[in-house]
Length: 360
Ligand SMILES: *Cc1c(COP(=O)(O)O)cnc(C)c1O
Image 1 (cartoon, protein in one colour):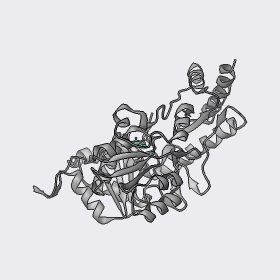
Image 2 (cartoon, protein in one colour):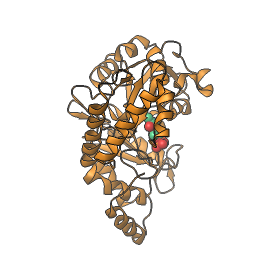
Image 3 (cartoon, rainbow, N blue to C red):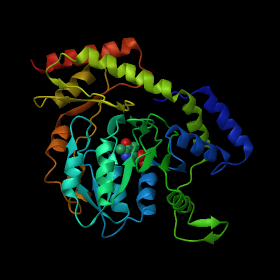
Image 4 (cartoon, helix red, strand yellow):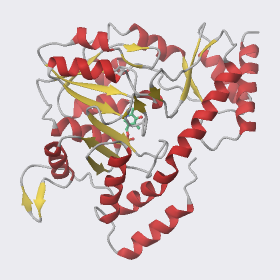
């Protein structure tokens, strides 16, 4: 559940009274502030993370005949965006330290048809962007970042979304939310202009249509809600980080669990705290947590390569052993920034007790 600051209520009323409900001043201001937060010159607001992904791939000119290298361990929108533009997904295995694309495996999977790498910064931590940007540059490939879960995450000094073309989501469950919404970040002014056309019916000025387009516009109400969260966002990340540290402190001695870790030189924003459970006991732990009143969720129970609408089209699903192991063993336990120290203690206790119980 999100508890938005009261300032969001005020901003909404102001928008309603302004009479400009979509693609107005609030959207422009949100774009400028979001771009500044991520150290990029251009940000283009859209109405979902999925629209951001489809828009980024379209604006890069990726389509039929092209292959896009991507992770099999993500939310379905990642692969759907590739299918939507008519390109072919080729899955590459992940590194189990950050649950993201393994750069060496990416380089080994490049074919003459490869046009882009679509990396996902899963659970709030950046992939190994040092190596992935090098691979993309060496082979002249576009680099698209699915940063739907990674607002403000960093690799070195640079933010998620500042390495290639960044695609963010503001869906209700994300670290930053507008209910529904998305943003594309880029250093490329031409790409930003193509995206602005694509999101608004391909219209350059009123009734001047320069290409086919969509309606991906964000409302000013949504932008006002997003803007209201930006001043507190570092606090949100700090509280999530403190919760993650406390969970790790409380669970680190358990042999049954492999705990998530912030990799050196990266800033994890802890969208999820996702553990791996050894010995095939993931479902037992999830059930045990539910019995003790703690919600958990499996992100994600299947690799994308196995989804029926993907399997026939995509390549690479036969060589992703790490992703398959993760899909069988992961479970996410609560880490969000509204949790109190007492609630974290209860989650730690319930996890320890459930593991004891399920081994009886
Ligand atoms: C949420 C999410 C999306 C899709 O964003 P929407 O705003 O729901 O369209 C895409 N990729 C990942 C990894 C996500 O978590």
